[in-house]
Image 1 (cartoon, helix red, strand yellow):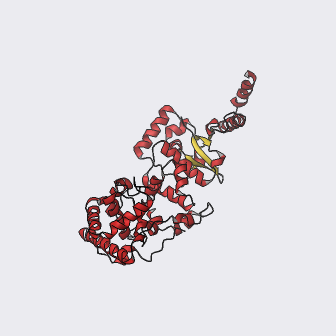
Image 2: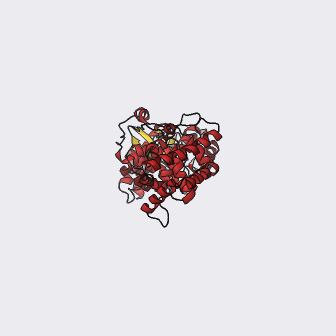
Image 3: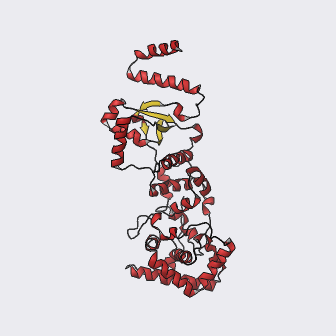
Length: 374
C-alpha cells in the first residue's frame, strides 16, 4: 500500500493544476469503479470547472439574497461540505441539486480563488437519467431541506402533468400526498388543466389528464409554451396561494366525508342543491366568510364560477368535498337550471359588491370555451 501511495504522490507532485485535478479525478473514478459503494453517487466526488456547470430549467428552489450571503459565509468558513448533484446532458454538466453552491463558486471572489474556479460534483444515478426522474429528484432534494416555493412547485407539477404523469405517481415520486397535488393544481397557471372538468357545465369531475398525449424531451420549450393555456395575464384577476383559501381549510379538496359513502355524498349534493333556501344560505356564507377563496376563483373569467360556488356552498354547509359534485347530475334538467340561477344570483351579488360587472349565465358558466394544453 505504501508503494502505491508513493507512486501516486510521485506522479502528482510535478503536474500543473489542471493536469493534477484531471489525474486526481481519474484516480478517484478508478477507485469508485471497484468500490463496494459504487452505487452511491457521493462515493465519487469530481472537481469540474464551475463555468461548465449549468442550471436546469425547472428547479423551484429559489434563494433570497440574505440566504445567498449566508450560504457564501458558510462555504467560506466551513468549506464545501456537500457536492453539487449533476447529470451529463448534451455535453453539459446540468445541475440536479445545488446550483446555488455552484453560484458561490462562480460569484464569490474569495471562494472562487480558494477552489481555483472549480466545483465539487457528483453524478446522479444512471436510473435517474430521464428528465422526469431528474425533476422528481430535484424536488425531493428541495423538500428534504424544506425549501420550495408554492408557485414554482405548481409549475413543476404542470411539467410532470404535461409528461403524462398521474397524480398517484407524482405524489409517490415527490414525497407528497395526492390532496397536496390537487391543491397545487389549483394554483396560478395550473387551474386551466381542471377548469373545464372540475367546473364543467354539469359540475361533474373527471380525470381527463389520462387522455393527454405525453410531451417528450424532443419538444422545445417554445413549442410547449405555444400550447399551454393559462389565465394569469388578466389585470382584474386576484390570486391567493392555497394556504389562504378558506375552502381548502374547510375540506373542499378532501377525498371523503367520514361516515358517508360516495353514493350518499352524491345524493346529499342533489338534496342540498334542490333545497333553494338552504342553498342560498350556504352561498351567502361563502360570499361573506370565504373572502380569499372568492377573490381567487370568482375573478377567474376562464372557469365555471357557477359550479365553484355550488360546490363551495355544499362544502360550507355540509363539509362534503367538491369531489362528489357529480350529485348535480342526479337533479332533473329543471332543477339543474334552477340551481344555476340561484348560484348566478349569488355570483352577481358578489360582483356588484366589489364593483365588478354582472354576468350572464353563459359568461358565468364559460360555455363553449375549449382548453387545449397541447
